Image (cartoon, rainbow over all chains, first blue to last red; front, side, top):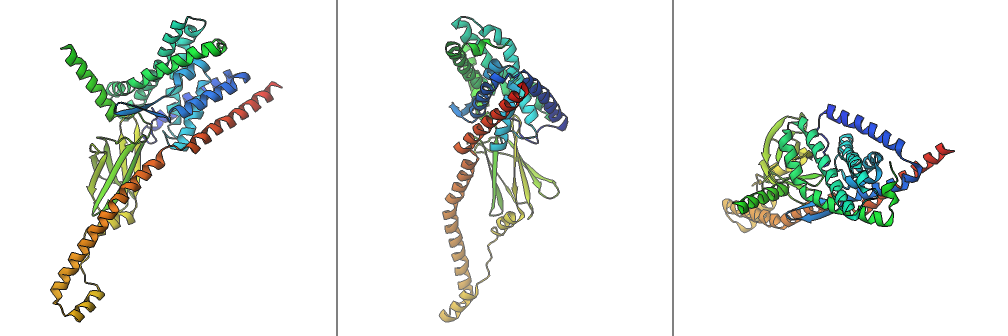
Length: 201
Length: 202
């Protein structure tokens, strides 16, 4: 998911920075004073999630959690993911500073999409509905990000359809695990702190 | 028919998973020895980078010298083209890329190892006079000794080299301190955010 430095061309990098800047400013504007600690906690979760590898078959996967971030935060997912990715780039050289704009946009816009798709479903709904929408939300976060990564790589000469297929297939196990984790998180949040799911409009 | 289809799909999925990156970083490590440059590539979780392109450039003027593909162990080796600094670039799938700079000195050392010098040392000539052995015999003896020593040293250093590569691999993995440091930064940013929101409220 993290595109390295020196892969993308300058126009793509610039477009990523501009789109991310717009998303981050909108996210900061929409962020209420009371939400700041919640945003920080979820940023930490996002930052750490990418570092923990879970072995699956011959390979290993890691969580991204962008679907959960989007569902709980909405637009403030943009500054949250920007901070998480910036720290990953600075501390572990994952991705890169020049590709930070593109990487943030790829993951955060998928997060915002899952926010608009699933926030209604998770509000005051039955347990089964919560599990279902939580699972889909986690999957959509990964799927959307994978789709956007493929789109960003088109300009490097990788044909879009093959790149997209490859990335989506490679992320199938992550999508399923992410869906399960998001569903568990949504259900338990609904039991412990239902206001986290209901507050935003 | 149906089972065959599902087996096929399953194998396609597993092979594509195993050969493509889910990790977020590729690492590349190279060293020169015996007139060859050996490279090893692996993802941040330690998996080998298989069947990915390696390009070798002249470090000074960025001229492309040669290209190749990593094998099933993520390794690729090539003969040293010239005694110059080399920039080795690895391009894996899904936007993963990294490079390794092999300095001119390292390349030179790797080249000089290729042809072991056979000049007799002054010590041996002294010995020669004392023992009055024909010159050619000592020369052969010296050469043999040299190859024996070289082989022995190589045998001893090979595991060391492997260990060094392992350590390099380990160093690229995130440590607990770094993770905690990152969380600390986020908490600090939270404080700054709260500070400014409170200020704008009043």
